[in-house]
Length: 498
Ligand code: FA5
Ligand code: MG
Image (cartoon, rainbow, N blue to C red; front, side, top):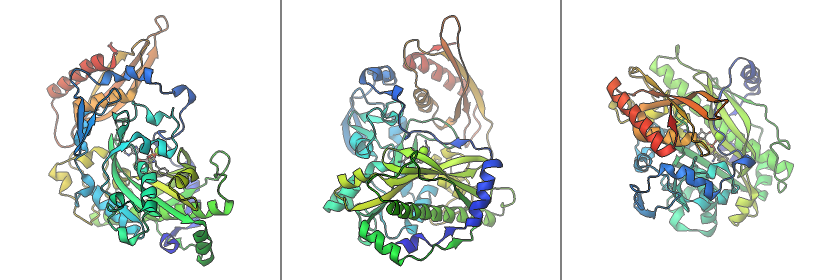
């Protein structure tokens, strides 16, 4: 296991070089969101206050039952999943062999031959599995209806693949075939001990080139018995160093009281797990970036596109790991967050009946990795059915995406007063725009805000950038969409247009 993981470590020299580079040369705008950081105490979620954001659901026209991939659910006053989002649950991009996300998924699965591979677990999960089983506090912002698509109070569209951690650990322990039989290479791996889960996940999120309300993640879980660790340590040789020039990995993080080890773990265990995890992830990312560079060279456009990818580790916080980290890659001049990871909270393992084991876990954003691997500049393209996109890819091949001509964008501003005494959540606005404009909404940015000194009323102005990926849009068409957006903002969000 460790030998597979240690195929290629990243050379200390490259690390050093990048540590120097990363701080000074590059402007670091972290393309990330703090979804799984602990909630600020002031952000408590109370049922009563949720009713204001309920405005998104129009009680008269909403069905009382929802159909999701063959299951029927009763709607209630938590329901906020929209038809646009429900439509996406059946798209199955991970199962279209020529789709870049499916090609990437297979590539990663191949890198982990001794893990069980899951890629067909449906996205309707319980609130318990998505949040409670992982130790999310009751007032965690991730649970709010402004961040998460709820099917009803007890069910939601999974917001991350970690939702399956406890479930799969437990199933493996108990030999629960109903879940384990979904593993593609079940016989190759001890399924309760290490597995990968690739799946679609759903979040009410911002609109820009690297965020989409439906995206895909690859979860990795790897556990060891304490006796195993001793054995592996005794047998292990020192890590090899990588000569790859595609990625320069920088890691200046340290385990401290800010990002602490758990009291259940010895220093030695943590050191082993962290090294094992980080090497596994560095290897995977270096492999992917090396393939990306090779594809660019084949395509003959290495001169004018990025062929070096600085990678950095930063501290993070998740309710289900400690210590925790994120990895970022410099892409198109900005730091792109590609994953979160950490040492699994011991409570999850003991809840699964695995008190004798310790482990690490990661969750990669597959679109973000696919953007790097295939040179795809905008996350919306993964949903395109335009043959000019789909015909560029073939099963098992890494081709660099060749842009088709960019169509002119059409920016429109909307200025409004926030509801007085009511709530306004930016993600409600994002969702509303997506619902009406679909993928014509390329980006939405807050461009101005102020509070009137006399009335105390607050105003905001957002710029909606409309742009099609495959055709020219007409002014009439966009004006008509913009008018609908404005009208629905008044009706559903309770704002006053200026
Ligand atoms: C998580 O989802 C954790 N479950 C990851 C994890 C797993 C941590 C196991 C520890 C152990 P986060 O919210 O940071 O973490 O999302 C993980 C990755 O998903 C991000 O790094 C990013 O690559 C991707 N991602 C997040 N939001 C979006 C989005 N709206 N569109 C596309 N990709 C996204
Ligand atoms: Mg994150």
